[in-house]
Image (tube, rainbow, N blue to C red):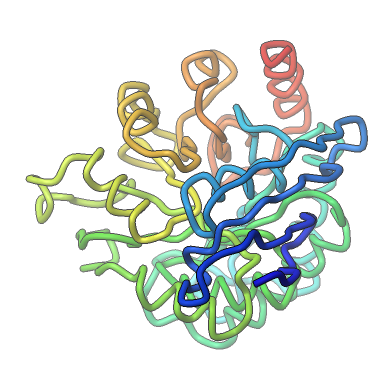
Length: 325
C-alpha cells in the first residue's frame, strides 16, 4: 500500500504495511514542517504508529512548537444567556472574550482555552443555546488570533458539544472531563466518556481536534476509585487514546502536586499538562510539564472571575521565556 494520508501541517507518507492492517496500526513516517512560530523551523522525520503515544507527542509539538512548559491561558467567558448569572448581550460577551484574547496574544502566550466558567451552577444537560453562543465566541476569538493554538471546554462535561464547537469554529483541541473512570463532581455523578467521545469525533470528521483529558480532576470526590492510583488512571487514559493528560489541584487555582507530575510523566508517553495552581513564584516546579494551563494567576487579584491583568501575564511570560532558554 502506497497512498498519501493527509494530516494537518504534516507531510505524511504511508510505509509498506500488511493489507489487513487497520488505520490505527499503520506505520507512518511524518516530516514536520514549519511550526506556528515563524522563527522556529523543524524538518526531522519521525517514524511511529498512527494513534500511538509517540504520535500524540508529535501532534502536540506540531501544534505548539515546543514540547516543554507550553503556557495556555484561560478565557473565562462571561455568563451566557439562559444561565442564572447571564446579564450581558452576546455582543458584549464576545467583545470581552476577544479583548482578553488580544491581551494574551500581545503578551506572547502559547495558546488559549475558552471556557464557560461563569455559567454557574453547572449542569450536565447543556442546551443548544450554550453551544450556539460558545461557537460564536470561539469563532470570534479565532478571528482575533488566527495562528494561536486555541481550545474549548464546555461545563459541565459537555465534551461532545465542545468537540462540535471546536470543529465549527476552527479550534485545535478540547479539554474533557470524565474521560476514564467515574467520580462524583459538585454537579453529580460523572461517568467515563472516552468511547462515546472518540466515536463522535470520528463520526463528525473532527480527528484533527485533540482531546486533553483531566484525571483525578478538581472539584470532585474520587472515593469511588480510591483503589485506583493517579498513575493507573493515567495509563487507562493513555490506553483509551487521550491526546494528553491534565493534572490539577483540589480546586480552581489550587496548586497541583509536583510529585503527581513526576509520577504520571514517568508512566505514560503522551503529553502531561498542569491544569491549576501555577504561578510566577512556583513555575520552576512545573517546567518539566508539557504544558501549563493558567487562569486564576493571570487575573486581577489572582481570582478567576476578575478581568485578565495584562502586566501579570507579561511578567509571567517574561520569566518563563528566560527559564526556557
